[in-house]
Amino acid sequence: MIADPIQRGIGMTSEKTRQRLVTRLRDKGIRDEAVLEAIAATPRHLFVDEALSSRAYEDTALPIGRGQTISQPYVVALMTAAIHGERPLRKVLEVGTGSGYQAAILARLCDRVFTTERIGELVRTARQRFHRLGLHNILTRHADGLEGWPTQAPFDAIVVTAGGEVPDALLEQLDEGGVLVAPMNDGQGQRLTRVTRTATGFEREDLGPVIFVPLLSGLE
Ligand code: SAH
Image (cartoon, helix red, strand yellow):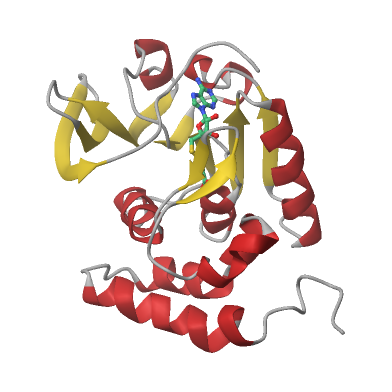
């Protein structure tokens, strides 16, 4: 009987299962080896309810309670690759901690991750996961992420993991040369969008269609 969930990685949650997910992401076009390594090193089954752990290495979003979801691994990889490699990532802000999985991936590629979540219960569970996995470079805040984290700005990158309107206040917290990735509405649906802050303004690039839960304001 193995009681420790970190040890429960036999079978459906084993190293081999995780490697299969990495192979799938590579086949789908993820080329950034550091991102793939971070995915291989992060036990996604510890970021979902135990009843769902056998599905944790499928390339799908899964429910995490409170009407929210842990993002699809492909989308996590795509968003991470979209901010990685351009410049050293000293400080990265995430809006929408959710399960904490995206933050855990970022923590392996950035010096420090600042992550915000509006639902208190999700903040508490995510914090416990970071602690148990020894991810000490993640700071979590129960806050409306649309306000950013002004006392820690500027950021090298900002990752928004819920879809909607990104306020200027958030873009203003990007360092010059910094990048923000977010699902933005284009009238027909959400498009993953990368915004780069230049010396004179902001440049936008489209990275394709995505489906995220909505960005909401205020706390729960
Ligand atoms: N990155 C998460 C994905 C969670 S889904 C993961 O890897 O699991 C998106 C999350 O964004 C939800 O938990 C939702 O509560 C949160 N969210 C939505 N609007 C927000 C806001 N304004 N500020 C902070 N969090 C927000």
